[in-house]
Amino acid sequence: MFSKRKIQTSFCNYLNNNLNLHIYTRSISSLKVVWRKDPLLDQAIEHDKRFKQCARVVKEVLNEPGQVIPLRYLEKRRERMRLKVKVETFMNQNPFLFDIYYDRIKPKTEPVKFIRVSDQLLQFLEEEKQIYKVNEPLIVSKLCKLLMMSKNKVVSADKLLHVKREFGFPNDFLVDLVPRYPEYFRLTGLPGEGKSFLELVNWNPEFAKSVIEKRAEEESRLTGIRVRPSFNVKLPPGFVLKKEMREWIRDWMELDYVSPYEDVSHLEQASREMEKRSVGVFHELLSLSLYKRVPVPILGKFCEEYRFSNAFSSTFTRHSGIFYMSLKGGIETAMLREAYEGDKLIDIDPLLQIKERFAELLKEGWRQRAEQLRLKQEKIKQDMELVATRVAE
Image (tube, rainbow, N blue to C red; front, side, top):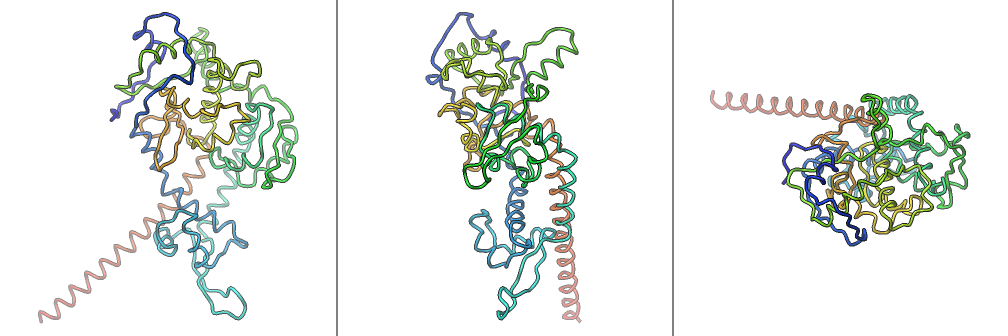
């Protein structure tokens, strides 16, 4: 088990204190690092479990025509929504999301229970639109960066739809936002049919700086000394690398940083330089994501676009001071260590205002339900006391 106190240090200093400074080279594929559990980073994923469950059910209803659905139809989708309780129980537990009313499925049938979006949820959806509007420049820059890092500056539109929640894109970004920025984007084909692509039209140099490069520039400005772009490493106490792995990483860390926006078509896939570039791309992708973490299967969908090797997931354990591979919930999730202090995010993405507002809506409903249960229990207690008094008389 790791201590809750994290130690942040320069990896180069760590290595120089523990190594003989001789050149040592091995193939990347033969270098292994034992995976170790990090309870605090696992807990960071657990924090969002309940909110994500509620979001899945809300999405299911919002996708229905008129945003209404018979309760029994939604009940049949519990497995798809990964809902462990009955839908009506879920609604009672989260009272501000939906309303129940009666209507007929067909004109001559008996009325049945229907579910519709509550007034509170409708208000949240309007607030969500405003948050997206205010942060549209950020969304555009993220989308451009995803294209600029790709091999041919083009990415499957369907794959981008698949990661929209990871990066905070609106549901309709391909049909609403993209057409309004023809200077940056060109969409070909029809999204959803598997043959649609989003292409970068113009390269914006302002977007072509990674988080690491910006950090080095800021440190140089503050200190007046040129600072090399380099990865921050947070090694948990007690974390030990084998000698051969320490030597390989020492030499690898001394290599020049390769920007994820740089053309690397000349690099060999198995080279250390390509490994440096791949780590840079993963670092940038995770930095652009809302929670500074992305499920590994989702990253795997972009192997071709970003030139990831088939065994790319081993990168996250091989560079355990930069990344953490969580296995929480039976899903491999790549996390950026430097983005967390314990189990809390350090820098909050502006688009997380949407999640925070949704959380407020849920918590207000939970408070109301708790108060109703308290009053109900008090009423039962008072009734029992009254009955006891009458019996005593």
